[in-house]
Image (cartoon, rainbow, N blue to C red; front, top):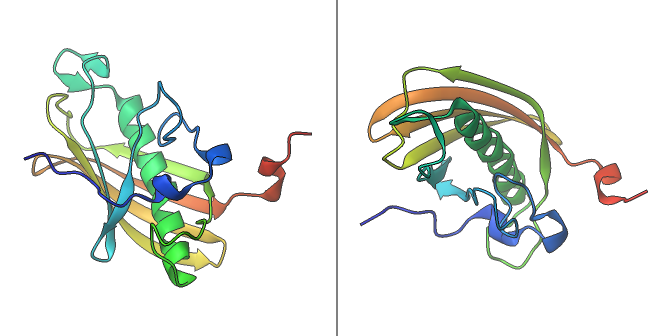
Length: 161
């Protein structure tokens, strides 16, 4: 049976902010990454498609960077939502984050025929700034690690001026 994230923070993003190519549920061409809790860590599971190759049999590094990026911002949203007394699916709109910095380290080649699992550990730096350390596994093998510093989305992102 294929593992999946049942309660994802991206499911609760309002429609106006659900278009991200990586994690936007409304972007028909996107990846639809879904990030949820597993204990005190966060988790995103994604099965790369055949077109996500660098060379036959291995995942393109840009997909892995995108997974780390969206997992980081989703993890920050989960953490602040929980800190504010809420959980995914409780009907309260979660905070939205954007990436302030993204670091990716490719540890070993990543096969494209298995689900990738991103696992995040979260640290609050400031009430509006969070650091997420992420490891990406293919089966039990660590393939990449990354760090995302995510900040609460500025109000200027909501205006169309």
